Image (tube, rainbow, N blue to C red; front, side, top):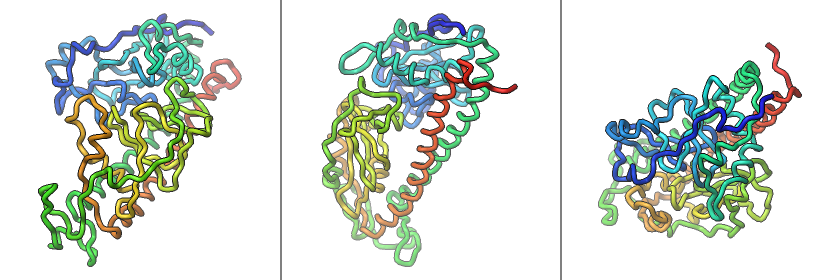
Amino acid sequence: MNRVVLGDIAEIITGPFGSMLHKSDYVEEGFPLVMPQDIGDRIINFDSIAQISEIDAIRLEKYEAVENDIIYARRGDVEKHAFVVSEYGKIFCGTGCLRVRVNPEKANPLFISFYLSRPECREWISKHAVGSNMPNINTEILSDVPIELPDKAQQQKVVDFLSATERKILHNRKINDNLEQMANQLYEYWFIQFQFPNNDNNPYKLSGSPMVYNSLLKIEIPEGWRVKTVASLLDKVPNTLRVQNAEYKSSGNIPIVDQSASLIAGYTDNIDALLSDEHGYIVFGDHTRVVKYIRFPFARGADGTQILKSSLSCMPTELLYNTITHIDLSNQGYARHFKFLKDSLVIVPNDDIAQKFAVQVSIWHEQQKQLLFENMKLSKLRDWLLPMLMNGQATIDD
């Protein structure tokens, strides 16, 4: 076993400075620019990722992230990273991020990614981060991450073995993404196109059912439906303890959900932080605009994590979640977005249609929850096996 630090086997650079790229430079279609909020647990979240033009891509060629690169956030959830795969295409390391390029002559990049995902490594990075309110890391800190490096043959065996678990995790994530897409499609068909089933079980608007002009939204909406602000739909949420970034653990009994792109940002054992409701909660990122629907017991993350639930039967939390995901807050710039969300006008259906929607999507949400729990178990198994495979407590037959 060879003891090295990450800087011995990889080139680590900082993403472009803010002065090199401004929000006004972003384009609708171009090349993805990975920012801290886009980094999940070894994956990149492309849902709301910024994109740059071909001209800027040429100018920022130095910061391109290619297959087998590793991308870290410089601030916030600094212990997590994304591993770049070929399916991502041409992408770039953005402002606020660090790019790690492992030398394949010295180490297997995928092995290093697995190794850096271990709880011990994540805790080391969090412990050595600087900053009292928000953790920050730099190239020097990341370069010093200690690594126990087996020979390349053993690295490949570990990668081959753990990749099977990784493929199952990715497969489950893909199923969950498809379930999320199904719920979005149903929402758009019923509440944007207004083709929910009428009393004769035919598409409402298409069959000529009555529509009424709404002066607030300046569109026609189904007869009997109303328009309200999001704030008027919200119920009180228990004022539980907020877990600060520095207190996040890599393992524990209670998952932490915050405004980052990752569904689960960390863990805690502090029961005073626990939130649980049979209908779930909506998590809204005040800074990031990330929206999550959580149907399992969890702890609220640090500053900027807003917790919402509905107070009306005509707008169950399942429906409120999909409604919020369709509100465009992208033109507010860098701001606390919750105040804009609360003032947003939304269409409120009648109880019958709202409950029918909630019943259907609840089935999909339950499937998502079960797959999420399976992935959590697989991830823990992966993290438990890696050190055992390395120190010889577990062996892999050829």
